Amino acid sequence: MKIYGRTTSFNVQKVLWFLEELGNSYQHIELGGRFGGLDAAEFSKLNPMKKVPVLIDGDKVIWESHSILRYLAASYGYPQWHSQDPYQCSLYERWMDWSQVLFQPAFMGTFWGYYRMPVNQRNMVEVNHQLQKCEACLNILEQRLNESPYLAGSSLSLADICVGSILYRLTSQGLEITLPPKVTQWYQRLRCRRGYKKWIMSDFSELKAREAY
Ligand SMILES: N[C@@H](CCC(=O)N[C@@H](CS)C(=O)NCC(=O)O)C(=O)O
Image (cartoon, rainbow, N blue to C red; front, side, top):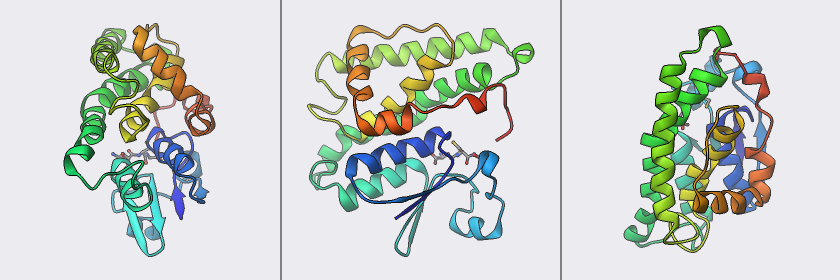
């Protein structure tokens, strides 16, 4: 299996973390960002969107980070990470979708508006607006984590991988944000996982004040 994408890409990191959880062997190829290569004709054939991550498994090519995660779980993660019961799948998939549609855009609003923006060009009114949206998402997570230790129940699932990947950058980029108590405990559990330490808690300082790519 081959996974293409720069380590500093948040969407690539999710996939790398999950590959680590699965224990499958894989080859990671840095691509995009300062490594370039996304405009090459060869790469466009793999992903017409010219974005990372891209997974190659034998003769199969998969792009879009959440599609890759679903593919991996269904192919290699049964029964721990995938169920044949559609309702059981929906218990973790709803958080993946919620994350992509609500939490991740709010986080990206802070990350692009604050961390990746040169200081003199920051619009702090807009950044704080996005930060408030993040706090609202954290309160939703707090309610959920009052009911179970992980987002989809008693064990780690793709829900935690997608949502949990956001917390490291959200809390490490220099903005003031307080995690609610249950979210804090959950975040501590995620931080103990080998894949989280290796791929999510990695240096992203090369992105500071850099709007390109
Ligand atoms: N929705 C897509 C987003 C893909 C995307 O925007 N990837 C970014 C990195 S996070 C990218 O390829 N940027 C260009 C670059 O890194 O050069 C996914 O989840 O896979």
